[in-house]
Image (cartoon, rainbow, N blue to C red; front, side, top):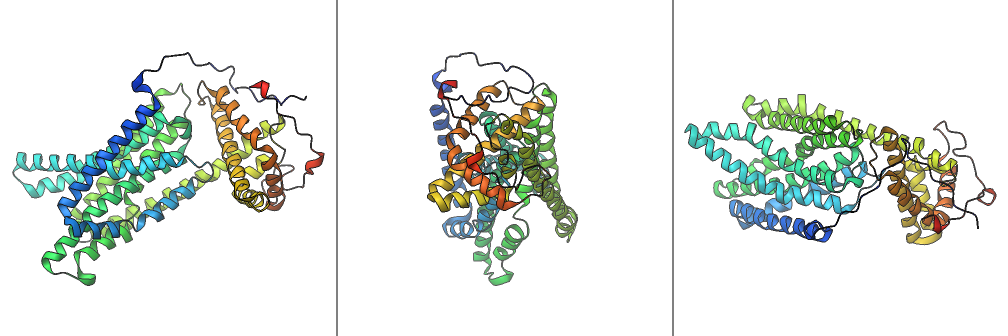
Length: 433
């Protein structure tokens, strides 16, 4: 029986292994997950009670109905950015839940306490509200949201491989936070209209909805994404650059706090201060950041096309696979081909193959940069094993996709037909594992 091809070795030399350490009961995964779910559950119940107390039941329901409108659009946008290497849904659910429950609870309690303390200390409630909104709130809220990004960075490190992952986790966290905050503001505005008799376009609810949901649904995600970028840059940094890995996330958090403070302080810049800050600062910053994140996503595809040929040379992939996997159009064609010939299960298998191959490319790229970690060989072997299990179904689909997608990347062989019957594929040998 032929043996499977040798997988590429660690780019920087032999990798160290793990030393066995006994796991204590509080370190077990199910205990940690249970504690986290309990924390988020309690936070959700408390924040629900607090918001309902401030808005009333009717105001809460109105605020909930209006606040939910931008959530699917924001989630879809961040999920679209994550299509090259989709992260696990459980990370995104955690991020959204943290933002909507834990971060919102921290913000409400801390902001209220700080504002009351300043009002008592200065005997000037108006000054306390302004200072709380422009100084206290940005620090508290951005730090609370950054905690979710930090937790994923520390405890789900394999899923946090670069800037796009940081942007997506931060975006989902901020979307959850903005959702809860919008319920509070819109519910309060509805209560004000109930007392004053306001209705229609002239109502406080309509004005609040226009400003928070129509004009600036991206405000909180824009701030927190800066923190996510900081963690994403740190994830790409070599392990020996510890100062950089620590300071860059802090720098991203400081930028998020600064932008948040400018946004909150816009109302103090005069009658048209809000619109001036919105037009001259927020919209250009949003456009620039969006362009940069999309460029980063394209860079991820280039990494796939550059890193995977090493595995094709070793026999783990066919010659055209690295370049088909580096094209979103070819990936889609491959999934559709598999779904057409093998049903939905076939499409899922090809999607899994594409995900594992992308993770393998990013792992090797980080290994070349010295930031892959000591478990490089173990992780590489796991990913190659997952690819090898799915090769018989995925290879024809990706070969067809490579032919259909055509060339355009300047790599030899991409887009040219490869007869599968003429290509000798090595046989998988389980004893290598």
